[in-house]
Image (cartoon, rainbow, N blue to C red; front, side, top):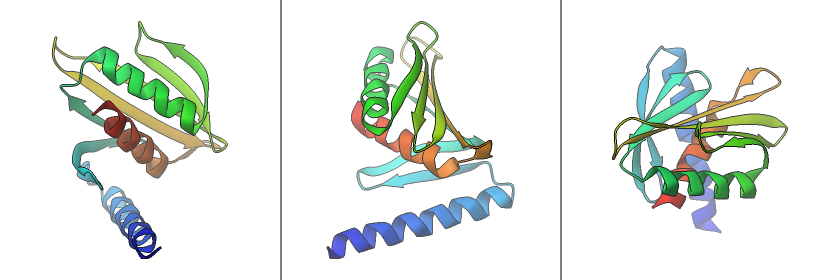
Length: 133
């Protein structure tokens, strides 16, 4: 019970820091999770992305797993590395872009009623990266 409160406080604090950082125009930050720091950066007010050495197929499977748990998959295209997910009344778009043979980029965007949902994108991003480990 005590641990849960501490986690909630950390999440609220981190979300506040991200919000302030974005409002101040900062483009990059570190996404913290209980399993360690996952390097990622905001490329817009609704998008988180990062590069990883996880295999494309493994990352795709992690995306599918998280998407099925957290929402409903509306579109999926493994060839384009694209998923569209409806979750909590909003839409999440997940892209996997192969950069090199060993490196892929994970990009997660989220909006609800046309409003940026960076926290939701961050949450999906972290869950996908944890699942891919």
